[in-house]
Image 1 (cartoon, rainbow, N blue to C red):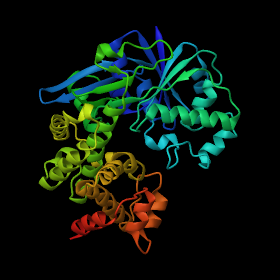
Image 2: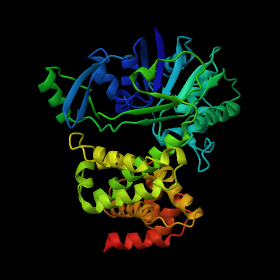
Image 3: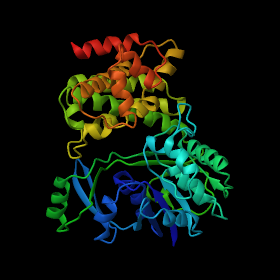
Image 4: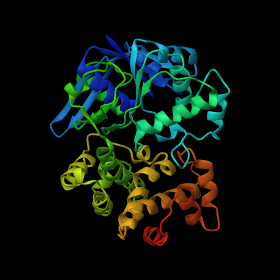
Length: 421
């Protein structure tokens, strides 16, 4: 039986990579939480299994998933995590820690000025993803595949470069590791008490850690493995030579509009995606951004962009998921730089305006200003800096500079004026 080590235990992993692994059969997962003990404790009393509730137009399906058989919490047992990374039985490492968990600078390289990265360079007991990977891989003698499953363009290559940069700074020699790119897609809301009650009523199980998701799922993986892997393609994953076109389409047509919906929807008084997308103003903005994004895509995926957009709108409208806008709105200062700003930049090179992409940026600015004025803390790694920017003499300019917006600020300011009217 093969073994995977997954770093970043959370709902998305359990609805996506763990589900694919369970479907493929023959492999088990050691899962690592880099911070929280809550999910480990919730799953421990039920053998690390959980109910995956798949909700679509035809109703709900309740599957018991047993792919994860061991859970580690890194702050409690950093040595156990390093030992698991060095374990020759582990031939694949997967990662879902969100964009901020990579500690990258504006150029996409490991930020060697980050306090957590600096601390890890000086310590044998790391705290960060990159610190754990570099120190764990340095203990291995056999090759391993390390696969990022986060929403970053060129995610595998960025992760590989970050690990190598850390290793150089720490004086470590790494084993042969492959870092393939991958694109992941499955909408997965946070677990609620209502979901637990639903599972109990439907199955009779008092599940402390169920997960809800949609019927749609996609996983596109670069065919660059260092050794054995599960037969994920038997569960529908696609193993391809080049992930980049699929990754770009998803980031720009799904994730970018998702962010726009999150900020604009909350500004208009909505709490969930399905309610926001039923608002004609939000729906028109999302469709507009999808059209603008589609025109920037490579030929190979541009042809079916219209169908892709319609499928996305139907997924967003699914009322069974109750996907909270606040969940999507987290970490906007990082997300906009890979989801919306590239659309504006690429269209500018073509001499094309981007009114709906500018609307997305303006909605984020308006959201930051509203939350800061109300004294509510932003769920963002740059929350303190954003609050300071909001109090600047020109807060719009300060916030745009914070996210690296290099275009004409005029369209953003115009959209912001519309939102304030």
